[in-house]
Length: 219
Image (cartoon, rainbow, N blue to C red):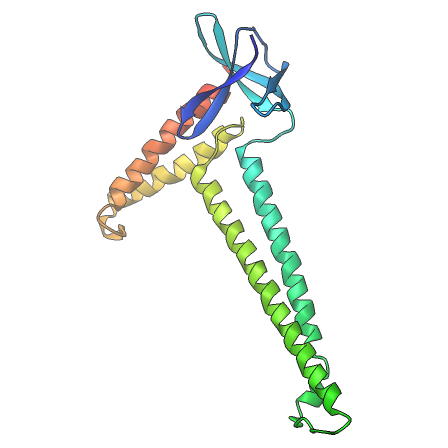
């Protein structure tokens, strides 16, 4: 029977390898996606067995997981933002061509031999400034997208890799401290639902940690 991936939990979305074979930790197995791409998986732990099927947690041999994918997207967006900001600054500096002359406020002398050069200078600088603004807006959009992905990563808190246990535990401890703070200091609550929201956060993280332990905690 081919190795296939089965959803282990919906929230957060995690998968395990379903197989009839018996594997040990660090065994390398192959999985073929529905698009025909073959991926190597490193067996981590037997999560459960049902009848003649085994379910294993795994790590992709290429190191990709939900966290690394989001972090890669953040890095790309920030690099794009930086690149476009550099271009924006270059065009802004170029738009200062003839600044000393233009600062004098000299009117265009109609019919004078300098008219054509004067108009061309103004037009070049105007186009350069437009480009500067254009690239600045592109950079701003990439920064905004990077920030949104960072928020998504923080809120999503993926658990498809072993080290997630420590990360979830840390966030859970922070959530417990906030819940206890609100419980002891009613006047510090931001609104009437602060305490219940804090408790819900603790419950969600405890459930997430339980799933993470099932997947990655070695006995």
